[in-house]
Length: 199
Image (cartoon, rainbow, N blue to C red; front, side, top):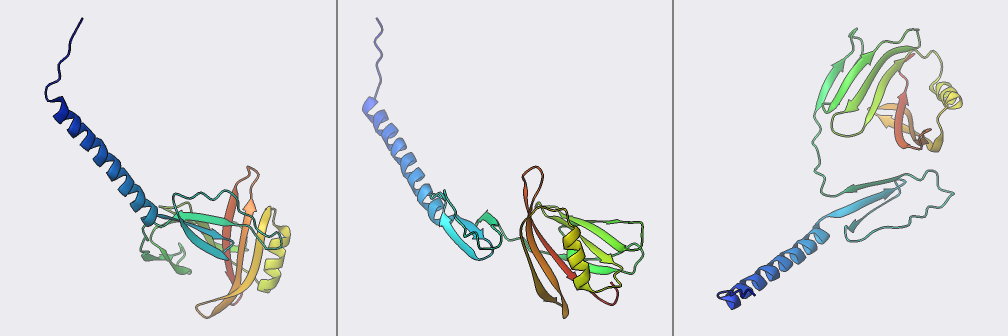
């Protein structure tokens, strides 16, 4: 038979209780701070945007089937805004120049044939964003080009809108659409087209 004696057990029990109390208090304060400071932002179809505390969970989202598209985007409000710096890109032949965010990596590709004059692919170093800039030889109207492109496309469109847009005094067309791939992935795309001379 063993007898264990604990010296000053009342004092030690007091410190243990105090430690547990402080730990619980810190946990509660941190929970309240996080719940009030950090929010989740939700955007639906570029029509509705709202924020809500992290302690809440959205289980069901219903969208009227008459609305075009059903794109849902979400992000935390604690993601810092990255100040974009721009660089100037000049094509290999030196006849085509544009400014682009420095966070993008660019690669120019050559296409045989007379239709595509320049093709510069880009991707964001920090986020899953990629795309391309193209200059076409286009001896016909932009409307005809877009109608043909849409008609011959093999993409599985979930939503698609086309609207006029003006950038730096140039009038063009903005395509805003979502597609569903064969592996059931949903991609959001934005394309801007405008014509200058025969390009």
